[in-house]
Length: 115
Image (tube, rainbow, N blue to C red; front, side, top):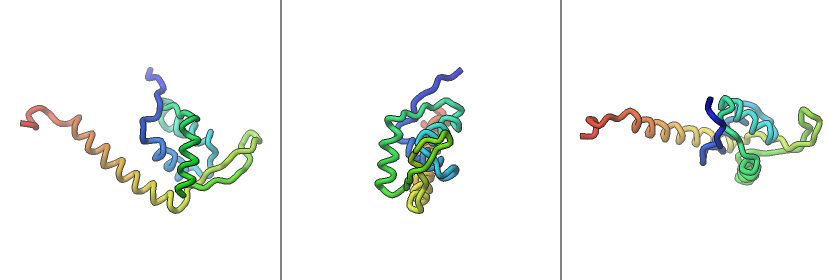
């Protein structure tokens, strides 16, 4: 059985934006839990990384937040994607797909392909 690992560096923002694109509004713990669920519980979202990222995304205008009541009757800040955030998600998704396609080529190449 595979162990949980931290979210790969540089990918958390993309996962947060995509999560909010599908399931908004969502509070921080809910975002973290959805990312973990979608990964098949193979990724662990560090709260100490998530909340500063949410502040950064809000500051740059990719997400907006407002206070609300969570499913367990606690006050929580709920986040949603902005129009700018949706455009940002499209750009970052395209860049991610290009990057992964390039990396995939390295796993398909054979020694004779390089001579």
